[in-house]
Image 1 (cartoon, rainbow, N blue to C red):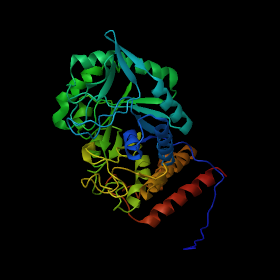
Image 2 (cartoon, rainbow, N blue to C red; image 1 turned 90 degrees about the vertical axis):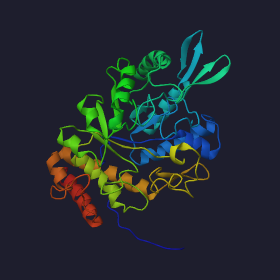
Image 3 (cartoon, rainbow, N blue to C red; image 1 turned 45 degrees about the horizontal axis):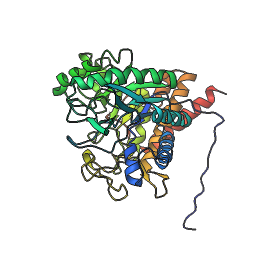
Image 4 (tube, rainbow, N blue to C red; image 1 turned 60 degrees about the vertical axis):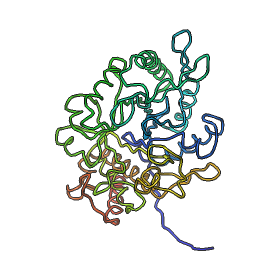
Length: 401
């Protein structure tokens, strides 16, 4: 016996409602295959995917970025990450033929775990939408890396593939998936990428008509010009969007390192937990973080051991790239950040229940710190946060007495 602690627990006779926003922390399936040394989509890989996805659900994750094709994220130009492509694509007599077997396995897994939203991998490369994702095509001569950094976003050969791929994928998901489906064009384009992003979107606009398209960015011009239906905005750039009347999702990553919420190892936990009340007060439809299992150096140039390197090769703040560690037997080892982010989402759920029983202003008044709460200004007082949560619970109990 090393230590002993007695804690008093109060169990409320009520259940919280489901999380009322989309919460996604991008899941990197290639990290699992690489770290554990197993073939992609082997039986063991599927077991690992299930275990780590289940741990994400325990953190409040409701949406998962699926590797419909290898996601073109955090990959150095000219470099390839290990192929993780759920949709089998083959060319037969000049026509593309699709195999949805692995995709259906992923859908079944998500359904069992209670995931309610899927995000299709980005249709174009990150930071400018200049090229195509790394997509493998089966041919009589074997697998061919037909698309990737070497093929421009507007190449007619890619459009030919998309004319088969997108409609077939939309139809299949409509028939085999009962939850939401989100599509991405390109991740984190800047103001100077407006023309490239517009050209990429023009490649797919007719094929995505009626679909829900969301993208992470920080330039208000994309929303002003109608290029993005639902912007996902960095928490330190969100004020102009709110002032212009938009109701964006928000995201944070390594660049959100001052004043706003984040979950670096060096930050006090309150700077993660505050996210729950912020998302509620500003009625954010969704939250995104880029790294749940990113066990790579920057740009995925080499795998790293997250127990020895928490900084993606030394370029990111410790803990930004992942929230869970790979236990030696394939069991997810939860970080403190994982636990605190879960608490933030449970705070949001409690506030949602109180708002249902009373109204949003009543619920928000308990956590908006005298109407001074913003994404960049909030209390660091741990006891204040705990008192506020207890007050929310007491109001719920009183309203249901």
